[in-house]
Image (cartoon, rainbow, N blue to C red; front, side, top):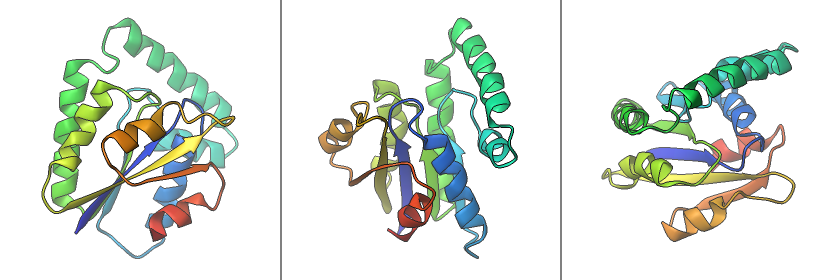
Length: 168
């Protein structure tokens, strides 16, 4: 059965760092049927995580923030066009790979649900969530996942979390 793991949590909870850690764990796993992708318009891709590993994380985040603000100013942040593109992308990734790890934006929303629904309503796909906490706050994600009956692991970011997420 194919599997999609959605990463969620409030802004700055460590989702992008966890996504980068998962990428590296999978890269070294020997399994070649996986894909790790950001599904948020925040402009923080794998490159930001890699910059942290090389001591340039602050500079990378500032650059990503600059581009994120430009996307917001253009009215394209979680726009219908962005959501439709992410739905198509998720559909294609599920078709092509056995495991998809999808890093969602920091806020539970109708737009995120629209993206998630692709996995929820695709036969033969198991859906799980990981919610990261920040200062004891889940950003509303625990209730979001409970409402749509998606199994959810709740934790705070730590360097061993990626291995835990992939083993489940």
